[in-house]
Length: 287
Image (tube, rainbow, N blue to C red; front, side):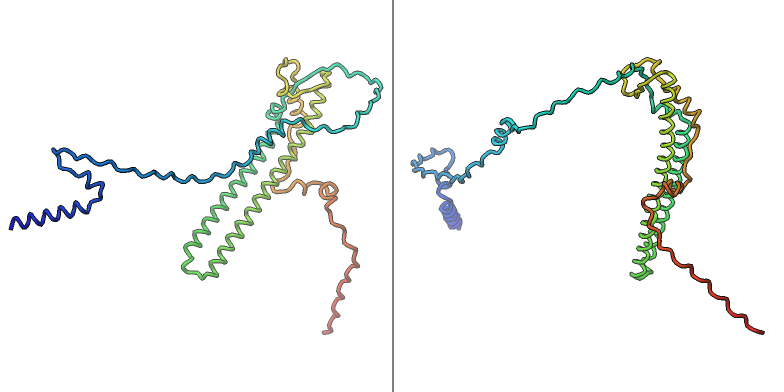
């Protein structure tokens, strides 16, 4: 019984060895025994991988561009410069007596500019507060619409959404218009200071026999005797302590005379019509 089992196991091992590839069968050996010499196997020639054919390199345009850049520019024939006749001698300019001024310092110390800054700042703050209130109302409407969606029909929901969108669009247009009016009002007020400041600078410069006034930022070095900033500030506050600012919410063009506001843009007058006769009174009824 035992022999039959061993014989079956030997046959199974032999079948397993025969099923192995030739390379593995040759490498199989029993340890502590001398490994039999293996006959030299002829090596098959190794096939070289086929290299893909490379396309011919495209011509380098940069070389042609470099060559074109290296070439000298083309020369075009220009007409000759005409001979200019000599001008008659004029009077020599006077000797420069220079003054300097710091306009930003003048504007910071100007009482009229401080008035503009205060009034315009208050108007802008009011617009910001109104915008925040309007945005809060939008959020409340959106939340109410979200809570009522289950109880409304699709047409009612679309109507509510359209109503909210129309209100948002109208409010945005209104706030843009208010900001534009505030900006124009500030510009009108600043123009008053600018016009007066130019006249004051000329007045102070003439009082000191100065014929050339430069901005302080354009001068690298000067002495205090050249600086007329304080004198101009004092005279400006004396002449223009305040300015006229257009009323809040009113466009500056609406406060200008008609001949200056929209003369060119005014439409052509409509043809005169005959006055419509008044209806005749009803005849009195006899009692």
